Length: 304
Image 1 (spheres, helix red, strand yellow):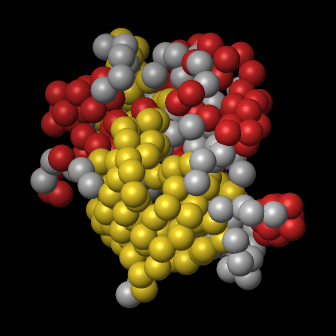
Image 2 (cartoon, one colour):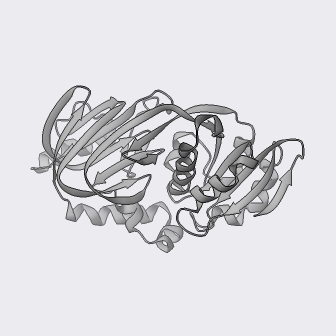
Image 3 (cartoon, helix red, strand yellow):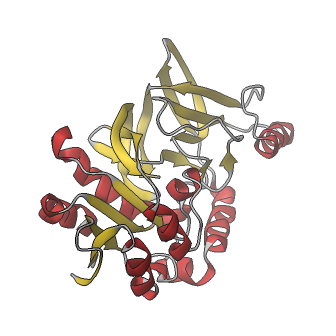
């Protein structure tokens, strides 16, 4: 812990910084972050050293603070949310988000600036608002769970490449994966309907973009409405099918493309013939043949 700054009589903020996330944005701006947040909070900062530290630090020190902040990518924020979820509701504290990753799905959804100092300045003026947390089995997520094409670009791209080339690293990884598309036979149960098909991609999300490819029109995504956006892309059998998907993606309209299943829901079950790799908030979580995904309406609070 280091860098204690701020108004002594203000609320106390523990700010968790991932020092290797997104071109070291958080670490290089540590003093500036403390200065801007110190207008509202008494700030203590903590650095993560390895995966899981965001969860461990939150659980170890949260009782001494009024607010917990995360400065890092979606994976770092996921670790903090995981810690908050394990606590009884009355012990949870609001989460302040400073996006500092290579891609920042949660930050983009909350309309936060990409500049970490500007994001801190905006956060210092924010207030606690309800937020829907997602669950896939025992795993929490704040933005998205996904499988198939493009979704391995985040965890399969080396951190040094991410930091050097930023979003371009994800594009390179995604472009490479299109030549190795796999089809996943699945049975889907959602909104009282059950059907089976083969899919090359699936995203169940509460964010404005998935995999850097699937994006939603303005106003569709609300982080406190108790609903996910579900996009499942079926096996592409012809060039014409690919063209229809590309058109739908460009227009951000998925409900009238026969190759895409789209809906909003509070829960969904996907059962595959064999285990397949899943990512949660951009991090690989393992291979599962069955995924029960549900939303926990307004179970957390975010400063925004």
